[in-house]
Length: 109
Length: 114
Image 1 (spheres, rainbow over the protein chains, first blue to last red):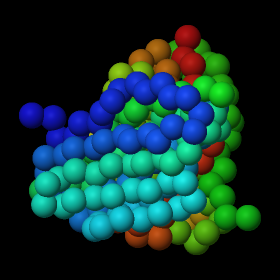
Image 2 (cartoon, chains in turn orange, blue):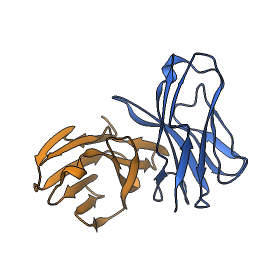
Image 3 (cartoon, rainbow over the protein chains, first blue to last red):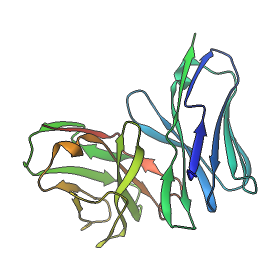
Image 4 (tube, rainbow over the protein chains, first blue to last red):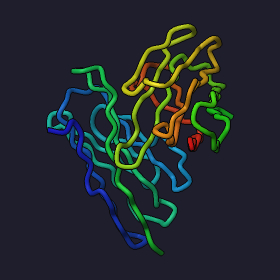
C-alpha cells in the first residue's frame, strides 16, 4: 500500500467554487505539511498541522490523526489559486520524508 | 527579508562537466536540505544537514555531494553530471529537522544535462 495518496490528481474549478483536496497516509506522523507549488515552480509552505484545523485567509487545513487523513480547503477560489498542492510529512515509523504526488488545481474566471 | 536563495536558476550543461548549485539562507536555520523534483515522482530528498559540518544522505544521494562549512550556505555539487540528473532542484531550510517545522524553499534550479 502507498504510504501517501492524494486526491484528486487534477481539479478544475470555476472562480468562486469551494475546493477540497485530500491526503491520506498509512504511517505514523507527528505533523503534516501542505505545500503550494506555483506554475513558475516555486514552493511555499502553507500549513504545518498536527491536530485539528488551521485557517489562513481563504485556506483551511484539517487533519484527523486517528483516521490518517488531512484535507485542504479553499473557499471562494480564485484563478491565482491555480497551482499544485502537495502534502508532505516525516514518518516516525521509518524516519523517512514522504511527499504526495500533488493535486494540480486550475481555477478559471 | 527572510529568504532562501539558489543560483543559478537555470543551467544547461554537458555530461561530465562539474557544477555547483549554491544555496544560502538568511534566517539562521540549522537544518538545510536539497530535493529534486521529477515528473511523476514528486519531490525526493538528496542530502540534508542538521548543522555546520553535519551532513547526511537522503533518498537519492548517488551522484551528488554537499558541504556545510557555514551555517547559511549549503551547496550541491555534481562532480560528473549525467543526463539522468536533469531535474528541478530545490533547496530548503528550517529551524528544526525536516518537516517537524515550517520549511522555507528556494526558488528552484532547473538543470539540463546534455
